[in-house]
Each structure stands twice: as structure tokens, then as C-alpha cells.
Image 1 (cartoon, rainbow, N blue to C red):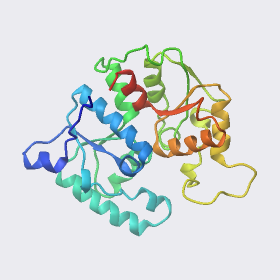
Image 2: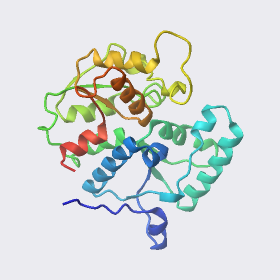
Image 3: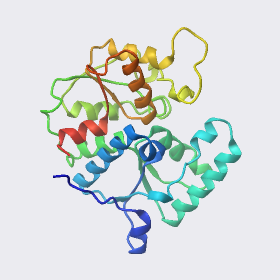
Length: 263
């Protein structure tokens, strides 16, 4: 029997005269990418499991302008950001959770310059906080002693110096966590942060995603853990490229926590 979760929508709560503690910014990948929708659903299940007061914008959520700014289109970024700031201001959003490090980065570091400032938390930080406070008790049996390697997303790690939170979430599952030789501030980008997900490959003998996947596979981990939709796409492509789909899984840390809880 499938348990249906009714995800609260910010506009509905506003009409009822209530405000959630957090806005969960779903992001383009969580909304439109079939694979990452599973991550968004897993995280929502965890929020409900914890009884967190939250809501999403639903159809009112638009692009926050990050891709436009990274591509150098400042005019388009400011047009998109102005719409988002108006929306966040209307709903008096003070706290936001994101599952995408790119969204996390732009709201935390760049939106204060365009009119919105609030507490922005990546879901790796949120999960770590819940575990540390004893609110999220994670069963140990599902991933116990399974070999897991974590790939550092650029906009989480080098961009915002967040290295420990996702690792501590994985460690709460008592896995056999291993590291690639290039990790944390020295981690190799999966390629998406350099826009390789959206364009033809640069000249050379090997694509970035293939090299990073080879590094992860060399650890002999059965799970390559990620905390970014773009890293997930690139590494999943790499696993397929190396014909390792039957042996190696690519999971977001939220999926690992939700699975361990049986959600």
C-alpha cells in the first residue's frame, strides 16, 4: 500500500494565514529531471518523518537565474532574480533549504546583493544538524559496512567550504566510507560545474566525467554518493559509460537516509 504525502504549498498556507518555518526550494532538477525527482521525493519524506514545518512554491517556483549568470547573461539573471525576490518577499521567507548546491550558493552568496537575505541551508547541513541534535535517528543495518565513496560537488565544497556535513551524514549509517585520492578542496569536478553537461566536449583525450568516474570506481566502492543533481547526472553517465550499472549505484545522501528509514 502506497502512503501518499500531501506536500504543502506556500500559497495555500498563506491563504490559511500560516507560515512554514522553511521554504524547500526544489530547483529545476528536482522539478523536471526524472532521476532527481526521486531525490526530492526522498528528502520530502524525511521532512515529513521529522515533522518539519515547510512548504514549497509549487508552480510559482521559477529559475533563480543561476544558469544565466554563470553563462554571462547578467540582464537575464537580474530579470529572473527580481521575480524570485518579489516572491520570497511576499511570503516573508526567512529560512530556505535547497538540495542543489548551485541554488544554495546563489541564494546564500549572491541574492543579498539583489534584494533577499535569509538563512540558506543545504540539505546535507540540515540532515547533519538533525542527526547531531538527536532528532533524526538513523538505523544502521541497511548500509552497514558497505563501501561508499563521496564525490564533493564544487559549489558545496570549494565554493562554500562544506566538506564534513555530507560525510557525517554518510558516517551516521556506519558505512565503510572511503576517499578518492583527489578529495575535498582538491576534488576533481565532475564536469557539470564547468558547463560540460550543457555543451560539446572540449578537445582532449578524455571527458572530465569519465576521469572522475574512473577515480570513484578505483576505490571499489559499491555506492558513489553525491549531494548535487548535476554531479548525479555526470557520474551516472560515467557509470553507464564504464558498463558498471549492475555493480555500482549512484545515490544522493537523502536517498540513503530515506532508504535506511524505510521511507
